[in-house]
Image (cartoon, rainbow, N blue to C red; front, side):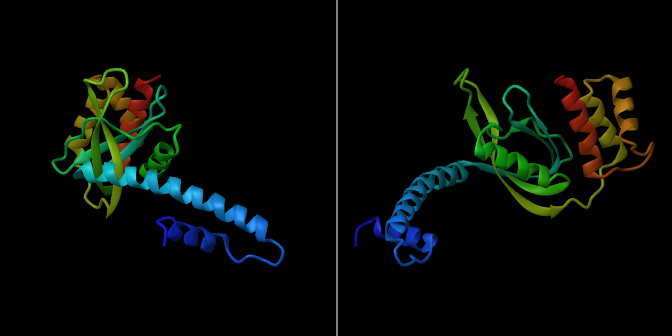
Length: 199
């Protein structure tokens, strides 16, 4: 049996039964599906290679902001030490992989995740590398609140030290004056400030 027979069998199964008199059209469909599966195999192999080379760390996903220039998603992450992670981006949002990762990240805001990260050389300067998310594994909802002092420190940091701007952002998000906040509440304020800083 040739190495391509399993691929053809899978394509034939995906095409479904061949009706009487539809042999030519069915064969064309099987051939197209076989080619698609072959190409998909290369794509999956590259994805698995990236995943295997990635480093992992747990964090809480606070928010996602889309860069205007690259259309990449920027993940706002709080690590297990309670610190904000340096910027980590998705693939470009105008690619299927990038758009899918942005959508997945947005669906996981406020949850604990295991982040698979790789260092990608910049096209503009191969000597410099950027942190890129390869995969996000859902570890469940973040049930621990963020303490008031920590939350306000992160908001002030996102406001580049501008206390008035930080206070306005806090109040516009209708967060409590005193006491802890949820990860999703903190993420909303941080995402708003990040987005505002890009406009």
